[in-house]
Image (cartoon, rainbow, N blue to C red; front, side, top):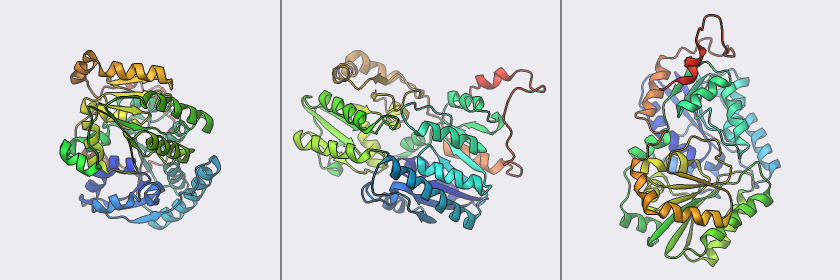
Length: 398
């Protein structure tokens, strides 16, 4: 089977990494990796080099990221992506395309595959994030896809509600959590050396992405509320990571850099790599922001996350996730709350709904057995005469 996988961002690659390595080491598969999006950008740390460090073979590069971050620039990047992906997929003629998530680069690849009659296997479909444009892209990708690998039973149900056939939906958990569990974490001393900082009494990891359903002005206001909640914290390191390549990301980077000029306990990192990033997640006392990593991966480390705003609204969450609006006073109260003895003691009992064993291997086994012939002929799944109890499909516990 000739498989083509697309990666367009640093976070996405680290989710896919173990799966890609399995593709490369399984004789039935002939794998081709397409690298696109922010991987090829100096602004985002040239993360294509991290792929090379993993000794993963890069089949081809598709450059679609434009210099600016306006709505028009993102639209033009998407349009260019459809054109270039179509050309490359026509050349490669893979048996199946593997894509993850919901970003516009991935949406472009899905549209290109659809027009070239190439089956699509989609990872992390069925999820809900009400605060981003990606919400619509994700569900659109699901309708163009033929095999679905979801991360929870709730997302399994959501895809059935979209009309997808349960026989082609597989709950395998999160590949990102699997990657975390397989990563050898650095100890505190070695991590301090890597980051060139000294941990304080309290340490907070902060990732702020734009809520793309909102205006530039609103995102700026949200960021200022976050800053107001942080700048008077005592004996605390504030460690910021790079936002994703979304609309208005440049404004966010500029504001973060201005903040850490004034607040000497602030740090900003473009790209850390998965070992350093996961080690940092393990050492900090708290993650604040609106990143999916805080919801999907942090619970497996028994660490709390304060989830801000509506970007991630609708996701399945563990009890370690505390939701709050962009209001500096409310954020301060939530910080004090997660530092309380009662909340800290509860973290040891946290169960991560995204954590399952052997997630990447489950995908391998499905793809080895799946019959791709006639899979392009999709039918909308609905209650039929030969299915007596459709309710069972909405109560799947796998």
